[in-house]
Image (cartoon, rainbow, N blue to C red; front, side):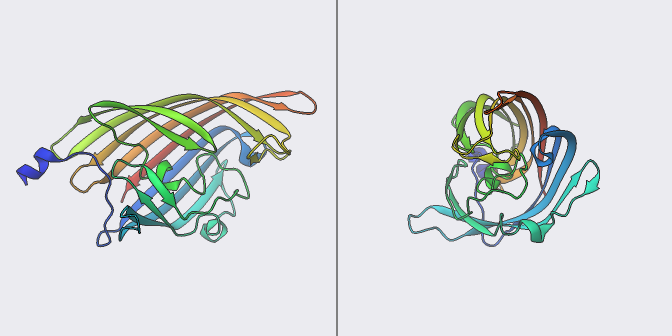
Length: 251
């Protein structure tokens, strides 16, 4: 065991014999697309199971995740978006991954949610929850993640807290340009858009990682998104500010 701790490094690994259950809470405060651009508070809570699979045809590590529960509150009121409502958008999915935390391939479908929910992307659940960073060499490094077509550069630093545990802090700051339809739902390009949105995204996070179990124990990420939405036809500007807090905890 001493030798194991001596060489232990941060790397992800999921095993068929050891399924993991994660609890995820996403809190939002500010201009909410789910309300058509109105101010408010919302909370999304869900549990998910992650289990390792056999390697794929290219000898890459694979795992599978599945939502076990889902609920959404808006200004304290429970909304009719339960597990049955979101299963089609977040079905059980497989993904291949590197030990550093890069998602190399996913079977998750690319779908638009019936209501825009910041922090949720139908193809990016691992990166948003139980694989929030890509590990690098040394105690400080940079890595890139792409969300909704925008590449974001992160900086991270780590330090051991015990022989088996590592703590990492990470941050990002990025100008983001996007488009929305008349109902403030995100769309892929300017074609068919009613709004052009320019925002500054600032994120920072802290995570605890078990180097022996090779998995995330807990992460907390706060994201601030501030900018203006310009109505393409009328040229009218609408200022927006949204605060996100994403907490993922191993049960």
